[in-house]
Length: 343
Image (cartoon, rainbow, N blue to C red):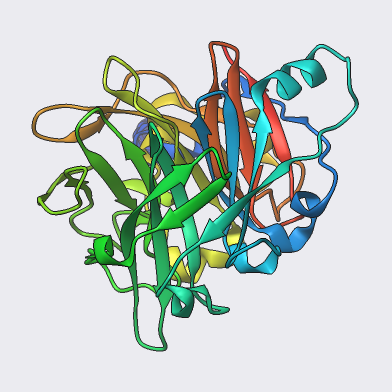
């Protein structure tokens, strides 16, 4: 009888242990698998296809997709350097199988007085248009800090030239001090310019927020943003419901820099099947602007199918009408322009 009760006691303790273990398992490690999306590569020809293009932003100007190189001076033009653009009709021709690739055209670029921000460690990170008015962010990296600027300019379509105005250069004070991290993302509402800091994880940025400016870059305020792990690298335009999408990227080699915490999006929704084989993250996340904050919507992230642990460094995004998204990489692994069909 004693042996029986001892066995029963051991069984009870073991059962309670199993229940406790199950409760302690983080939802982030659960095997919930959600749909992931493949990226259709759009072959590029010419200078924009080179690795040194380091495409850091995408934006629509009317019916042209503008590609922003991080270092425009690397591409000769009549002035300081060049940006690139692709007519929308060329993208549709490719998607319909009428052409096998695209050669982006050049836009002359002039930035009087801003040459010093084109050094090896600095550069242009994002771009958006309000009519022919253009806004960009600039990243500045120093030995002991990194910070950003937002600047305004004009696109003279008759001469095919973008000019930035030094007088509008406005410093954005970062919420954290991380090397090579600054205001990576820019988007617009009808009356405001929004910039987002690149790192918003819980272990590196205690008070993430979105910086709002008027179109003259004079008035400024910051409203809260939820913690989103890894890097936020670019944004689409804001739609009529105040919603927009951002690229959210993680390279495992930056674990010490970004110190990722619990991923709330994985906890809530799960992740794609390839994310159980590889450690990186490549996804698109939808945000919404409210009166008091910028918040996550209830739309699940769009997980891009991973091919390896190194991943593709997606740093540009733009909507393609109602078909999906156009995305572009920085240097790693090479210059890629891709299309993601969604929904």
